[in-house]
Amino acid sequence: MAQNLEVCSISPELFERVKKFRFRKEKTSAAIIMKIDVESMTIIEDDTVDEDTMNDLKIEDLEAELPTHEPRYVALSYCYHHDDGRVSYPLVFIFVSPQGIKPELQMMYAGSKLTLVNKCGFTKVYELRGTDELTEEWLLSKLKK
Image (cartoon, rainbow, N blue to C red; front, side, top):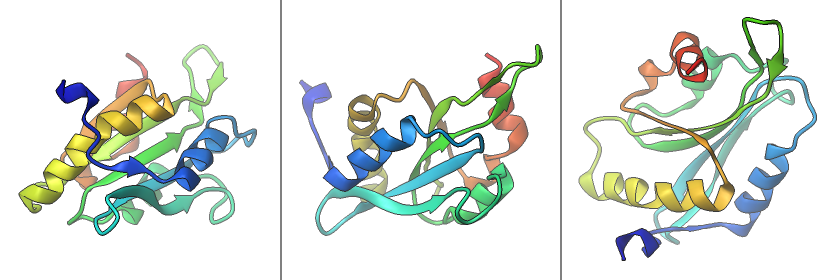
């Protein structure tokens, strides 16, 4: 029964944005940063980091865009160069949940994660306890598995 519980809803605009983002044609890395609007209990877009603002998103740039004191969800389209020379663009979902935040906020984000992952169809799902853990090495180690 708990798996059917929806703590926060996804804004229709964000849902459409993620759907289009999944099938983007650009050959660069980009990200959509999402947050929960506590007033409306809705998951909304917080920021977009892509080729409009940078030539190609670097993980360090993404890490710098994330707040260190609040949770965020990240949809990352990553330009991944395989060891055998192939290039792929996996869509990665990252839940960044820093330590020391209000328990109510932590529960709101944790309780809404599954809804967001399932409705948007993310398959590569990762969780971090701080923005400093988000590095190129960390991401590559996850994608190689």
